[in-house]
Image 1 (tube, rainbow, N blue to C red):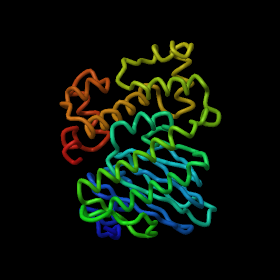
Image 2 (image 1 turned 120 degrees about the vertical axis):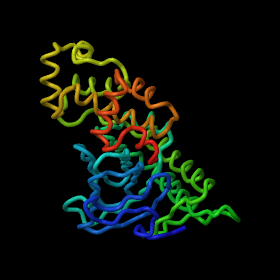
Image 3 (image 1 turned 90 degrees about the vertical axis):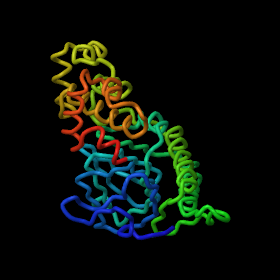
Image 4 (image 1 turned 30 degrees about the horizontal axis):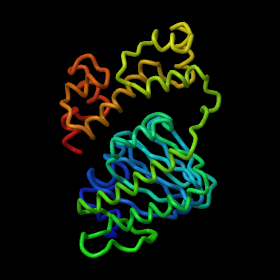
Length: 304
């Protein structure tokens, strides 16, 4: 059912919390073509994942300390719970893009992980042009399926520029998520992760990959340094100098993001989420999680 953004149930008004975000649990999407000057700022982040696919012009998205440009053929996905924003890229005339808010299926993380740039940002650049038509068709189908009432046939896929579709029924949500999953699989399987960020030392990149691949593992500065053939002091200095945070700080953030995903997508008890995410004690996990997300783990799960 097409609606306006300010008509979404539970959406906060613009104020100290920044621009509104759809409430958790919904599949909400639209297709916009915005002029220079358009920007969205969410200091509290969003309770759901945000998927964007650029079809024209240039955009810029940021989340936490990570920033990524978006041009035609780029898929950018933002994980929930981290301050973010996006805008028409400075100097660009417009930004035309599809966007969707949803609760990601657990399998999506494995497809997106090679494209992580930090702070829950996944940038899939330069998807081959041969796939653009199919990705566009999948977004159109997502928009149509989200508007299905469950009677008769789903609406014919169309862009519906400027309109927002909200999947209210369980069948509409599942169909829309299936189309979004097709988009994630198509783009991540066909694109190639960037070799590195400009100037990033290969040993630092390797350490990032080790942390991202298994944040719950018993990593230490010494073990990571050994894996990249550096002394602990040299490794810690190089990592901090290039990424602006210590290896243990990066590990803590990765563990908290991993814990948040487990809370969102599994029924594991909080104590097991803590252990699976690498926290030695539930007390320490609860304190760290509250500091990072503003609420304890149990309340975070209940909100989703």
